[in-house]
Amino acid sequence: MRVMVTDTWDHVELPVNADTRVAELKRRALDEALGGRPADSDDYVVKFRGAAVLDETVTLGTLGARANAPFIVLPRRRQPVR
Image 1 (cartoon, helix red, strand yellow):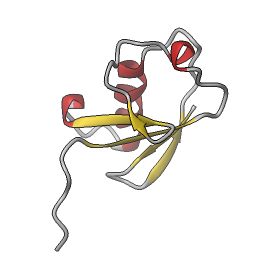
Image 2 (image 1 turned 60 degrees about the vertical axis):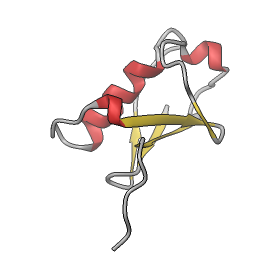
Image 3 (image 1 turned 45 degrees about the vertical axis):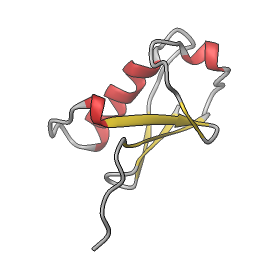
Image 4 (image 1 turned 90 degrees about the vertical axis):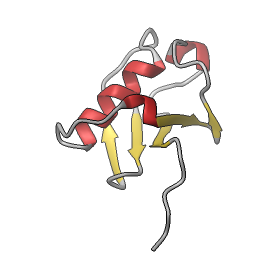
């Protein structure tokens, strides 16, 4: 799957299968994009097809995500612009 992590504006490619849960996808994408910096995954939300995935216990197969489907991981709260 392709996952865009907005904290780094980086695309991460993750090998997953249809049984992978959204929470696992989010955790792995944050680990990969942030280079091991600690991040509380509860502070981030996952979007798929423009909508937030509210139940992160669902699998990617249940969402209907196919190979190379784009996901976005972004902070749950808006960041101030300076």
